[in-house]
Structure formats: structure tokens, C-alpha cells
Image (tube, rainbow, N blue to C red; front, side, top):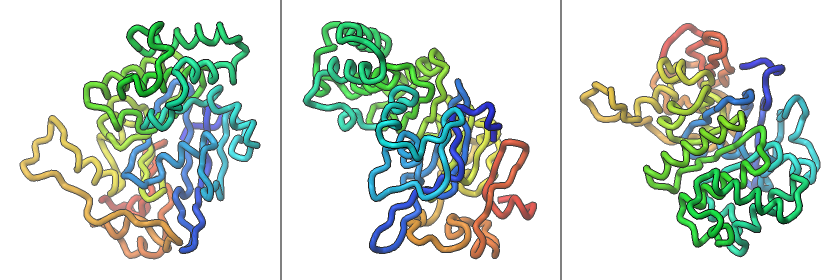
Length: 330
């Protein structure tokens, strides 16, 4: 990992729990990472891996009974996970912007786009209504809304899915935040529109020199955009490092399985795509040992009783696997 002096955002040993009648669901367990200005961190893993919850914890949007049970989140060295609601609300939007996968649930259908953007702007910046509207129009033009001056007073249902996502990006960058969190920002869009939105996101991030946390299940997007990758499984970090290293030489059996399940244009294999056998562990009152062991073809005896801790493989490349400690290979 990077040193704290370089990090804009540091997440340290984050654990998120959901208590319920059956016990305690550990949705995120001991996640740590840093991100610096101008850097893109890709967070990948299957559905239920804890990716979105990690993003929600950073911006203070965990839904009860979810709670941060352990760890800390630091923004420019200041702890923000234990702040009062009003303080984290001021940070959300001003210093940290969020783009979610479903714009229809993120935009209020009863308010015009103009009202929603100007309210966001005036919440965080000292602008009157006229100035905020001018700023909103500039943002819509920047994100590529055709005829922005006419469409600014339209309602969300009057926009296509791709245009609504552009409106969300405009709202997220309204105050030029230091960090952008994009949670599956193109899931509901067709392939052509996905490419346009991702290019827009990359262009905006580069212009602002913001840190971008890109949460996705699409390895191709991560390979083309990210500087570093955090691979999550059952709420845990299994591998973490720079994108070139992890894509060219993955070490954890789960990461290798993910890579083998994706079609590549240069793939010379004649056999079918290989899926990862079994299903993910449901982490309610999790047992000891490695959470991936029941799906792993290289599991050792120690995997049944001892949870693997991150091991450094080549500097900043971290792998949570007993094979790394014992000199083996998946």
C-alpha cells in the first residue's frame, strides 16, 4: 500500500456488520486500501462481495442495522467514519461525490433536473439561485446533454437511461470533489452508451485530478481504466495491487478463477470458459479458516482452521492466501 502521507483517502481494517436474529452477518471484513489524487482504484468481485457496502461506508450511507464495527476511514488524515450526520453530509457532495448504478432511484422524479442540481450546488457552495442555475447549465453541457439550455427544466423521466446517468455525473462533480465513487455506473446501459459514460467519467476525473473508486464486476473496464485493483470475495480482500501486475500474474485462486471466466480476444484455449465451482459463502457467524476454501482446488489443511492474512508479493502486491506463505502456487 501507499504511505499515508501520499493518500487522499485511507481505509483501515474496515469491518461492516449486520446483526440479525440468526446471528451477525459480516458483510465486509478487514478491508484496507489507500487512494491518491488522480488515481483510479478498481474494486471487483462477485455480487455480494461487499463492494458497494464499502463505498456506502465511505460516504456515510450505510442503512441500519448495518454498522461499522471496526476500523477507520481517513480523508486527508482526518477520521470521518465517526462524524455526526450533518458533518458527513457536508463532506458528501463537497469533497466526495457519488455516482450510483440506477439513476432513477438517485434522482427525485418529482423535481426537475434544474432544481436537483441547483439545490446540490447551493448546499455546498456560496451561490445565489441565478449563479447556481448557470453552474448547473455549465455542468449539463460538460457532461454532453444535447440542448442543455432547453432540457435543464425537464424531469428525470424525460431523459433516456444514458442521459440520466450523465445528469448524475453532473450532480456528483458539481462541487469538484476530491474523490468520486462510481458504483456500477453503467450496469443498466447498453454497450455503446456504457463506453460513452466510461469515457466521460475518465475525462472528468482527469480534468479534476480526483481520486476515483470504480466499483464494478467488469474486469475489462478495470483493465482499461484502473491504476490499481482491489479484489474482494465474501467481504474480504483477497488480492490488491497495480492493474498490470494483477492482470498479467494473478496470485490468489479466486482472482485466477475470475480471469479464466472472461473471454479474451487473444485467448488461444480451445476448451470452454472455466467457471468457479460452488457458490459464495454466506458470512453469517463466519467459521474460522479461509472463506474461499470450499471452492478452491488448491486448498491446504491450514485453510480449514486459520484465516489467511495479507502477504506482500513484490512490494505493493498483497495476497491473502496460505499458498503464498508456504511458497506454493495455485
